[in-house]
Image 1 (cartoon, rainbow, N blue to C red):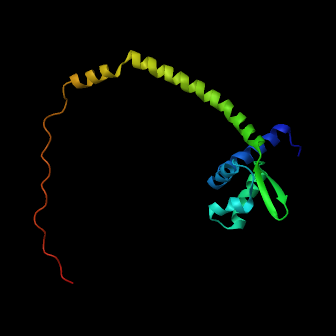
Image 2 (tube, one colour):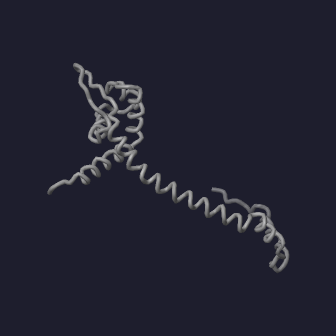
Image 3 (tube, one colour):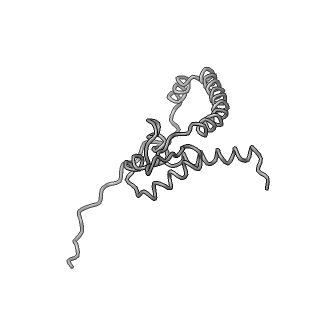
Length: 152
């Protein structure tokens, strides 16, 4: 099957959002904002096994959100901004859409409030006579004294 550019971009975007869905991975990205860190430095505050933590790093790396560089026996990771920028661009299209929709809703609600001010509604509610048949019935009485208890 032939993969088209749009399909590849969509898969990459799906991988970015899947990677960002986990709070541990988001914290790793937040830690990497300070600069490159070793795997050990990244894993230490998370309190999980190294193999379990490495799975999180692999997801981030597969999504292209981090880059790996080996310096002797130490593996350092750094942020890769490109996938995050592409995700931000994708989200900005929907931000524009929803901003326009919410602005239109705000204008509609403002005009509705001008036509029907809340204080007029409150006046209408308080000026109507009650349609109830009478008074509230008295509260039920509490039960009497406790009955005898069985001995075991």
